[in-house]
View 1 (cartoon, helix red, strand yellow):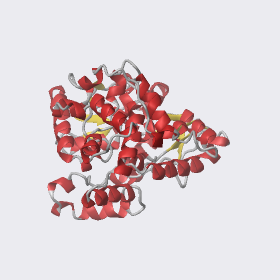
View 2 (cartoon, helix red, strand yellow):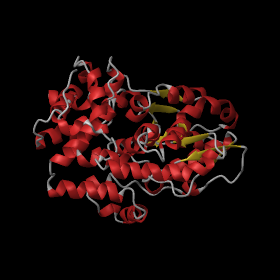
View 3 (cartoon, one colour):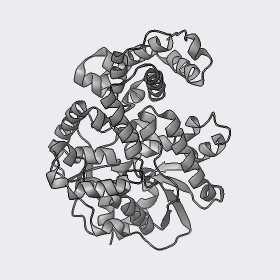
Length: 410
């Protein structure tokens, strides 16, 4: 696709990157078949092809409207279109650029500005944990929409961290909301790795991966979050203490794996960020190495029939498919994915379920309807957002797969 950038974009890094991405796009339309919002709404402008057309107009200097902003807002950034695209269009990067440009030119209503500010500041703040604790106390009194966002308190095992030391060591990013909402995911990760002879380290000072601010159009704040994590991890990385930086939330994983690109323009961080990205692994990528070590330790399997929901950030963002299912099967679990639409987003998508609740709920219910025929004892996934969002629509337990493995350890 040919495009002629408006003068204000010709010399900017974002404009030049967007132009290079647009050149790859042939507007074939294959992506519309796998776009969740297009499947729901049937509007060309609520699919990747239409959104690309809107962003092209903006970058060529056309007037920017509130309607353009809304169509871009409705994109989940699930990147399913990237898996489908025969031309390799990096839509995720393009839509981040497009949203940033539009955000600077269209003033949002006050209510939207307030909500987005609360999300980017509140979810990444140290006060999120006490706020979640207060929410749990008030949970019986909360309306249904808010109650669905406040998981029940974790059991005592969530605070049981292994104390053994091992020669093999990895870093773990705890995440910004996971320690408060689902702390057992982190401690279960540490216990499973400990059982396999790997010690889990956590770096003081590491926090949000940067995804929340970036996807809420605070790109500068997102880059600051990334720099903070690079600084926190670098002493252990540069000393060769750790063999990998492990992510048990696939949304964080896809972001950290792109640190090298995000900070490539920063001479003070470019080299270190690229090394951090190179070392980053989703927890599922360790599974082949863990199976032989864990299998002799597994005993009870109270939840043996599992349905796996692969998060978009895992299967499309990181392009990792089949690893969780194969690993769990090798450990003796019966695990299946939905027979239809396993590639489609569940509607969580970070803060999307808060900002676009109607579409998010429709996608959630569609996903659960496709999982129901499997009649699982539990649904497992690999990202806290998917887990929390799906659980809000079903009585079937929804867990992180590592929690199920942890419960079976002798």
